[in-house]
Length: 66
Image (cartoon, rainbow, N blue to C red; front, side, top):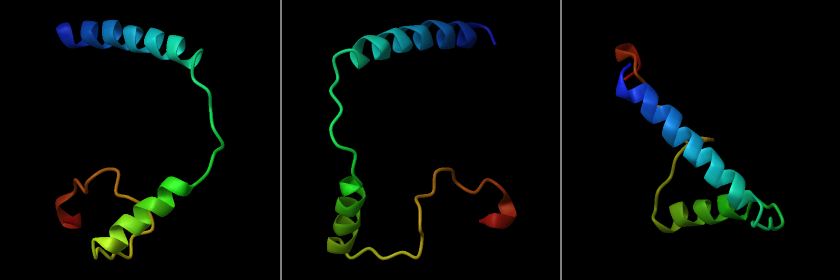
């Protein structure tokens, strides 16, 4: 693994410390699904239609699925 393992440990720790510090000053608003509705509107305005119910998080890696 070499340097990659060290990078993960160092930058992961730094990111965790920064996230913990930031969490002390952030005020949470009311949780809604408004962002989902806005996204659907943007797709509609752009003329994009799809039968997908959720976004594709990972591509299909198997050759038979392409």
